[in-house]
Image (cartoon, rainbow, N blue to C red; front, side, top):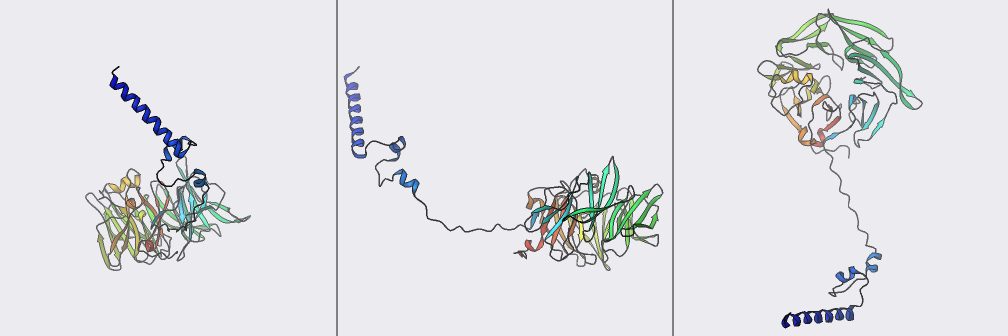
Length: 401
């Protein structure tokens, strides 16, 4: 080995030994390996025990309120139907869980959910509450057969239970309430359709009409002064809307391919889906307005039976005339926005892009409003969950603060 290299190695070892001796002389033997790297002799040193035992001064916590959103999901369970109390400022709603028939109550402000009943209605797919919520029409499909019965609710041992079970005739359809004690339904036969009124208190049935039509949708009850119906829509055939009076059909307006009809006592909506186009027209009094956005009856609700203001869901995408039949068959869904329409003035505005605000696709079905019309409730057809849109909150007004 070269002499120069030996001198270099010896000098390096000597310098290292002098450095270690100097460290031990000034700082003493380290207590742990952490101290070797933490205590470099720069600035004041802090003993570890002194750091661990020190108690920080309390810091005042400032609560930042979470902003409320106008659009909110109220349930995670699928709903067969729901009930909004007919009051100006409801604090809760009730709904029937699809598949089990259990009834739950949901607080609007908090979203807290509480079971109301313990009884089970297996395979329930539709539920219609009476105007005051004292009874429910449960509809089930068993072996592809539609059956409905009226469940009268009452208090038993401090809980809400089914105190009476009144079956409706097999295959009863178009079920609705005329009032708290009166049920409306139709029965279809090969010869046509018959409409009935059933009184819960006396358990008596009265036939209202018979017509030579089979595939129909009824508009009755819910505050309507008259009975209306329209033929099931298809863009290949002309459809009609009718008023029923004294067992006689009176045509309302002209026919149209793919006609759908929706109305209250002052305003009507006619949606046409023909071979080339799909559009809606609204008539209030003698004024008729055609809108560039089409609406389906199942996606619309009036504020009340007399108002010209109503809320509707409609797709954010341009609809093809073939969409209507595909939507009813469940072959297509509709990524909806929520619209407010004034039929008297023709003014309409989209108040919420539901998909953008929720982060998921919402296909509106079964829509209802509070008595003032500022709370809009609807189910998402894709999963059956119930959603709420607060129009006042969307305008920056929080009346529940």
